[in-house]
Image 1 (cartoon, one colour):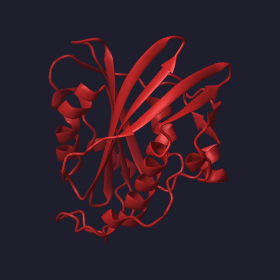
Image 2 (spheres, rainbow, N blue to C red):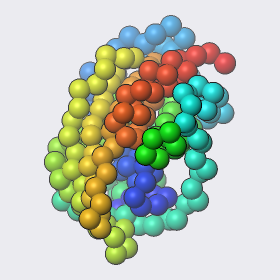
Image 3 (cartoon, helix red, strand yellow):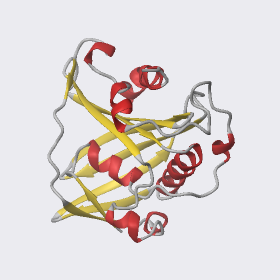
Image 4 (cartoon, rainbow, N blue to C red):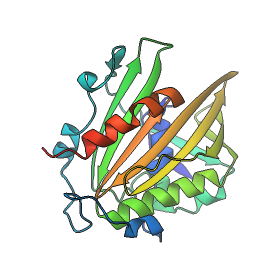
Length: 224
């Protein structure tokens, strides 16, 4: 399975692995009742509207600096040892199978501590596509406790673990990813919450994700 991503050894690769194959399969969360203003019949929000709902430095505590968007490197990334991910198909493998029609993203570095990173992604589409797509990918990833990601000559050892998600929104998914390369080991938590026709994904060091998930969800639910 090959995925086109921006760079290796940052949160972008984890987002690419998690979202590149979103498609439609059954998921009970898709039938949940959405909150007022985000009903299942609502049209997807525009990418511009989603961008207004992203967190900014003013929404966060002191110590957060917005990270400039990294230029795309157009590297081919190969996933080895996870058949569930490989079954997502050719579109997912090339990164062209994204079914979420609207998106916006932002990343922060927490300079008040160890320089940890946190990223937020917002997606909007039909309720069915959001729930079914993200549910399928999370299920596929946690079905492979360990696998490898290869980009060029770089080999990354990955491990995934399903985590209990807070009871927020209309559907929740969470996982802990541990990746090792060149003798260095990093742990990233990734939590997704669907609220109506908006999907919120926060990734980064576990402490930063836990501290800011509620803020991200509250702002994502706001009207502009």
